Image (cartoon, rainbow, N blue to C red; front, side, top):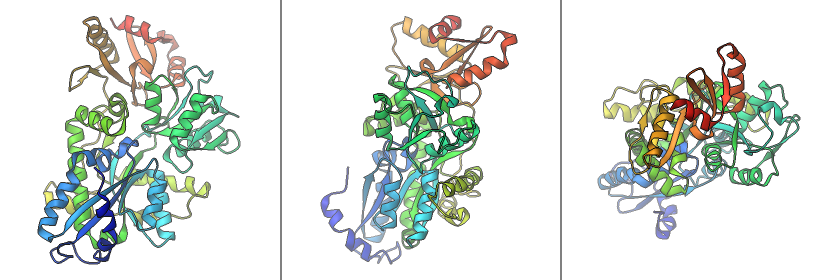
Length: 460
């Protein structure tokens, strides 16, 4: 629930005491408001936003601190569609903690330095080491089969977002000038999605959960899987440097709460998907596509070296677009807060930014049946399709069947994937271009593209 109006009116009073430490005497009897900017529908930030808010973990941590400080801590959760307005509010001193994607994080760092409101990257929410969180989609009946078909076409994206970065890099690899080879429209995700459905753009390059949602609803097909770039992409948490210095204990509370939310998501993925769906209006099946046990994203707060290295590779792209100047990534990244809470928890995970989990295992096919609060994983796509068909024959509704791309590993809806039969084996691909490439390299074994119904028939 959002903070009451009275709390917001007390925010200036809270600001007056932010120069004090977090301990007792930091303004006894006063109310301190911590403002958190998040993106409810950018569901790879849920452990620092939507899910965290619904679980109430941050409020619990702050309540414990308040009892020691004799201060009432309140949280003002502010929801935005993208990272840009969060950065604007942070650099105006109005948001203390925010979450956003990797490209917006760099803009956050640059704007903070320019406006003398420096920010620091303190944790990660969700990541994909190959870049699978961004996808280019087209209308389901469009005569487009690969990125090369976009030459001269209209493409919607959000300039400065990670999805825009994926589009630019993918077009460059396809030999298409990102500025002159396509007509790129800078649009909010919801506007771009509507434009795609209206036929006023030919393709949409966006971040989670837009591509998956449109595919699930039958309103789009995947044209390019961001994991083909094989470059990590992630979302993370940034804090105003001044706030972090003046209230380190509150920041630690936030990161402890984020860790708790991450534990919950990893141990109760279906319940977490249902909770996020309830808060956002997104289909739970779409949330689970990204955030589930075999989802496209891996959740881990740790500032993994490969993610920081990828962030440095993003800087030249943003500089070329004149969105940032030089960005000192090493100065922007601050592992100290995560290391503090890791040391306090005694879990020994503090080496690279604290609270690390094991690296993600390869995704497996997964089946979610109606009425069940757990899912079932399989060793092969064939076994998945057979189980789904058996369930339907028994009158059990299949909520969703997920299958990883045979090359990139990106999880996709089984009935929206492109299937390849190779003898008795079945392989799934996010895009037709990916399936075609595989078939072209395996014609001697009889590999061929088949429809979903035929794939199910082969599986049974």
